[in-house]
Every structure is written in structure tokens, then in C-alpha cells.
Image 1 (tube, rainbow, N blue to C red):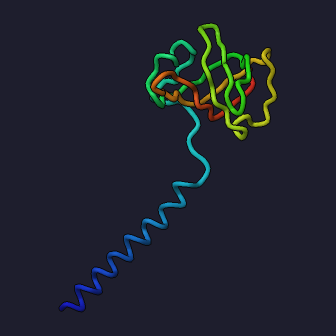
Image 2: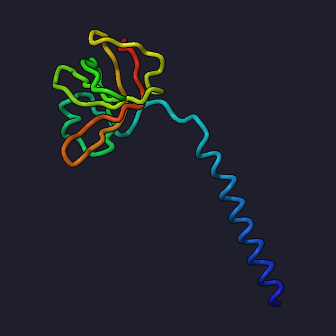
Length: 125
């Protein structure tokens, strides 16, 4: 009987471990849903300055200044906010202060300020 319990426990543990390892690749695969969201994106700098941490933003405006490294100042008709754009998130877009852009990302709320962690840059249409 003890052998049966030991074997059963081993089989159960092995099955759980296999399930965890087979599920992991599906979670890390590229892809996902693109379309309407139940959570509306914040669309102005003024709203972003008051938003909670990790709030989704989609801002249309202009990058006015490079602050060095991956930090920039972004401006729309409601105000200005600091944004962080990783090199890979430019998606081949070249911009000047007169290039109208759409940036998508999330609010990064810090103790002293809010910034936007940009996930995608696109030319405004």
C-alpha cells in the first residue's frame, strides 16, 4: 500500500510539473488581442498627469526635447510630460519636434512625478 501511495504521489507531482512547463511557452509567445478595450485609454497629457500607476495611455502630440538616454519631453494641447521610449519601441519611426506622433504606453507613477513608459511609437494619421 505504501508503494502505491509513493507511486501515486510521484505521478501526481510529475503531471503537475509537466503541466506547468507546457503552459509556460504559451504565455511567453508573441501575439495577443488588438481591438477595443473595456478600459478606455487616457488620451491627454493633462489626464495622464492625474492618472493612477499603470493606467493605459494613447497620446497624440509631439516630442519636443531629448533629455538624454531614452527620456524625452512630450507635448499635446493640454500640457507636457516626460516619456521613456526604449530604442526597440520606436518601430523605425524617425521624428523631429514637428512630427505628429501617437504614443501608446502606461503611466509610471513615482513619488515625485508621473512619466509615460512608452510601448509603441507611430506616426499620427
